Image (cartoon, rainbow, N blue to C red; front, top):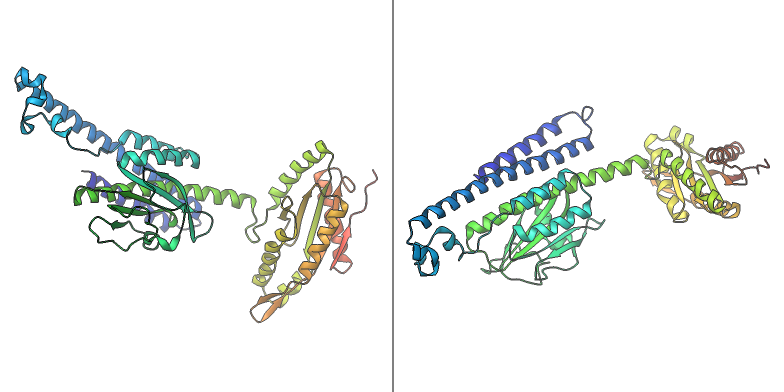
Length: 433
């Protein structure tokens, strides 16, 4: 029955993927497709395990009823002392007491799935994930690896069990499941190791399972589980099935979290340059203004305009212009302090907020940027992209007393620098009001 339901779940999930991705992107954007598929897969998983939980409950009730009937027909002396009954004649419960069983923790799994559906914080989900894995896979030891920001290195998020089975950090080339995208079983028990994931060094005994954590077409990590002994081939296949369901459900949650982070990032970042966008700049400037008023500290503002944009657009094309803007955007954070806020003010103007920077610091930083970009040469096919900068500088409180006033004064200074021929820095006039 569980296999049949699993096949239904897989069919429904794959069907939804095909249907959603067949829709034109104008009707359903790509990020919304990812979110829909994540929620759909999690919901199907919860329904799947709810049905299995109900079936398991019915089986347990049937077993208890059978035990009651068996006990009723036994002699009273035997029913009071089960140890006197031959093993083959004991009630079902007595026989099963001598055999280690692996009952799936349905209620705990349902609670875990509810956490995923409610989109609880990642730390809370990870804590619950580390607690439920030993219940689903008893007598095992495990470790969850996820990428640490580089697509070649994975770090241990948590470990469970009495045995250490892996290092705190591994390379992606050490685990075959990352490359294949499939469950890899390493059989140390029979000596027939499947592929041989090289990160399995600490306990080469029994069986080890490496399962990729994937969702929405992206790879996020790998779950490795080791157990000293598995009774038979059927149990081995059961473990693989449960691992597939568990990691698929968790992978869809991680994919949904990843989509949300990208949405947040895109809401405050400029798509082309990766710098903060105009909306975030204005919000940040308001926050810095309140802090400056409380602590009586200055704020610097630098406005930057590449001088040769029209010439590049006329001689080459828009792609060349975008390339130049991207190159400048990538370099600006390296020319300023960690606390400074680099932004794209509009299509052709960059802006930098410098909290706590007085006139001298702001001017020196702006001049450094102008000199660095003036020396920048960018290879673009057979051509070389280069540009000088027109730079406008303003400070609070010398040039303005409001956020809008500070932006206006810096922009006026920028316009003056451009009108005077470019490749120069102009400081806003002092406001004596």
